[in-house]
Length: 291
Image (cartoon, rainbow, N blue to C red):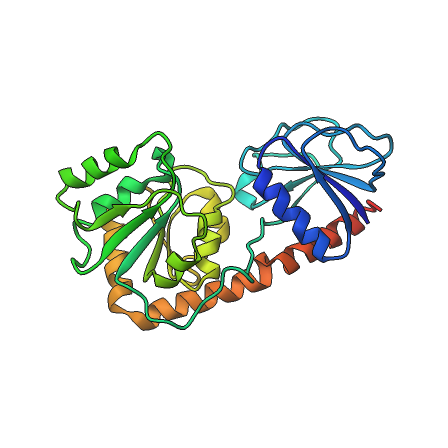
């Protein structure tokens, strides 16, 4: 099948989808403009709101991080999770999760450090202050590493916040990390403390695929990803005392932590790998007759 993927937002997600489809043998062109050139697609997959108009070629709209408008020219909407579907949505749609590269992110057999890892930019929506607060109750042998670029909050502002709580020596803000794999391999616990809906939690998926136990805020997008008590644990958004208790529980109960990570890895391989998501996209496109 010849597939044109276009994007004016969510460029990383669009690129990853293109790679998934290429692995399944499709002829895929990914571009950020609205021109097709000599490429004559069987179907167009759009991230955002810009796509070429090609007569008699179906248009698929992916509703991802930046959502994209619900326009009338779309033949099929694809949502990354059930929680992202608008209430009483009447248009034709399917649910296909965003994938994670399970060949790049995978468990390794090596001793972990007494480290709690929180990936993600320093933005209030990421809820990093929840973990900083939790560190006041967490086993004092453990430290928290925040890996993400400055975004609204600066490193200095976050360090000042930690200093005000008396945990400045147990938290570290290391900025953006190009390759997170070395940190995942060292982490004892992974935390995603989002305070609002996050349709695609790439941080959460990468933690799960890497064999690190995940503690996640119970927001809509993360609830699509995690099964509480099976592939991770939920805390109420912003509830730092609950989060601290969960961290200490995992620290003290390695068998339970191992159960969570084993289940999470199996889930990623079965439902979120490039191969499984590519299969699902192929199945949907063929069922819709887009070829």
